[in-house]
Length: 217
Image (cartoon, rainbow, N blue to C red; front, side, top):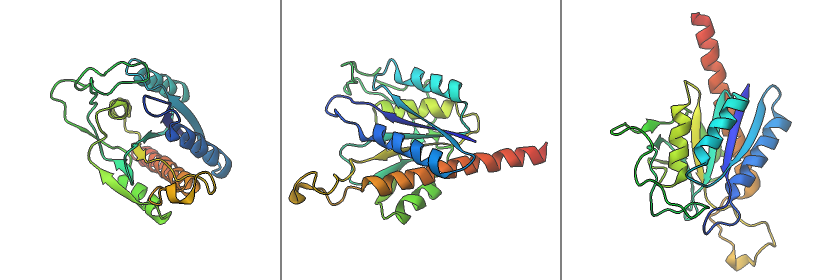
């Protein structure tokens, strides 16, 4: 079984995107800890003209059974599990090349929002059991995250796909003065472990679906 994990690179105002580092850590944890599950991590460029084609290329090359997408919600105080994708992008939200979005949806006119094909309740439970504050979100915003999420769900073909927005993780002890540390931010290691569990849950969901189809056949 294969799981594709994506994160994003830098963009205006964010020189060091934690979603990329979390993607790498989650892929390492899965490869090291879960026998029979292969993980590939891909950092997507924060450019409207490239991110979706990079996702498609990674999907075609790796042929994953499940997809977990990670993005940064820079102003968030909690992790957000995204329930819907609308493919929105905004001309006011500039990408890493200084270009704005098309000002609408990258999907056909009038199309209904796409619902996550990965199960959201186990994702919430995995994060909460790690002591991480999380909530279910109905909007993935108007930046590339929403556009990429919709593209991934459009390509899902029955596979579990889920997008998780993360806030900045808490700095390591001693990295910044204690009074400047944000206590509400999740710690990096528990967050990576919980995201690894979410990725594994998506793989198990895909496996159960495959077994059910096999029995019906």
